[in-house]
Image 1: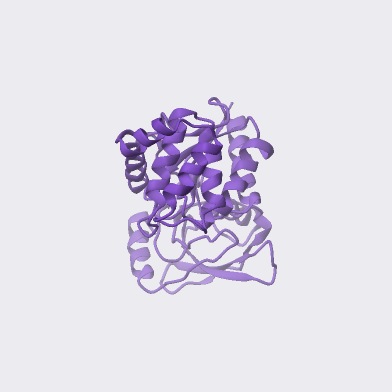
Image 2 (image 1 turned 90 degrees about the horizontal axis):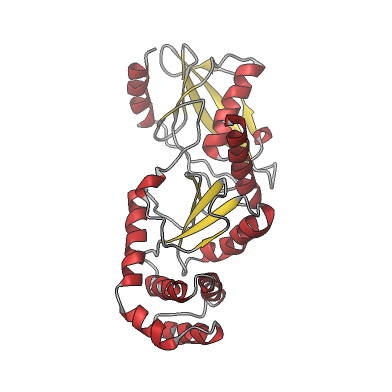
Length: 310
């Protein structure tokens, strides 16, 4: 079956199949047209398919992907099989995904919507050259082989929980190998998040290192802050961090920091960011509150690929 016909099949099948994948990192199920070696019931083909699914769905350990045997599919020239995802935290938690392949075994479809993926590079990636990354809060060496761009919201509880996780990744686990760049993405449902972002940007303008302490304070006091007392909290951070009050006031009331926050939000929209936190690891999106082993899996895989390409 040619790719054109396969895509027609995919569109027809997508109207029938509606399934979601809930994995340890809150993976959203997607239907993917993937070019892989023939999906015969042999170990080499199964290993190749697992490798593609592992990277596409960000499954740290391929042992948590179980492939069922092929069986006749719902249309002529198609076969199907079940892929079971097993939670690494609780092996009793499993989710099945229906996978369909054409008669050549070179095109694979998973549920909901699909995208054509090069099996030699199955990572989903965001084009980074569309993003404004200069003059932003950063930590880690500029020449690090791994760049993580975080789109965050200071009023987002999951961002608060992820903050210590990403700090550990950058400052300890993968120290000197990772550079973190912060991008503001305050959500509309959070009434003080944008003003908090502007204040944090103003702190960075005075002292770049103070941004991270300012952010840590906002996250620490997140449950206590509301639109009415936000300024009181900001003033206390200004004092504790030794920032210039007059300069901070002028910045908060000015346009420079606000325009930078607005640009970050535009960048996020252009990159199809719709939730926080979202991390782009060398352009690979990791969405939600990932566990450290997901960060480790993606980072180590990117380091290995970089080493292999030399």
